[in-house]
Image (tube, rainbow, N blue to C red; front, side):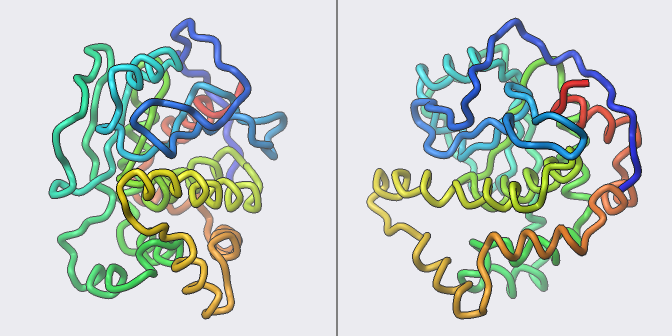
Length: 256
């Protein structure tokens, strides 16, 4: 990975961020701040810059107030168009929403393979997706880099896989160790248990864990192995992410 001088971004909204990662936003179950993780660049990722989450369309008025208090001013929705529905509560005028579907779901030769079983709910498809559609990930990261001042929250439906792929790339750029990135992914399984219960659905975690165990691996091992093989910065630059944007992303995640 090429070294970059960290650029600062105007991300301060005046909010004070507590040193916690799990965010209790009413209407969401899997919202997590990306601060507090060790970085090879020195120190730790900072709180308040970036949040990963399940669908923010589920936030209540109280949930939106909590998101605003946390400093969120931009929301990036990674879901496909057919997953979108009405918001539970009106979004605050201060929050800008961007819709950037990550999947490229219209490419059926890819998704007829990857969405045909439990593999869709695991990081097994991250590598093939980044190889086939690197511009999709690059577009999301560019939107984060170019967002207005304030915190950025990005989300898919459950906040585990699409949000997990974007998180993996962001934290890799911030030089967070692969094992820490994998551990962050694993946190979603525990958080999503309550979401499944609230919807009267079966918890997917045992099924997904068993699927990977049958193949002699785990979600954490898949992520660590992928990051050991992938030059994240090179791949994103080749997909159109500018040097300035790479530096700004690090500025959102790390104190200069």
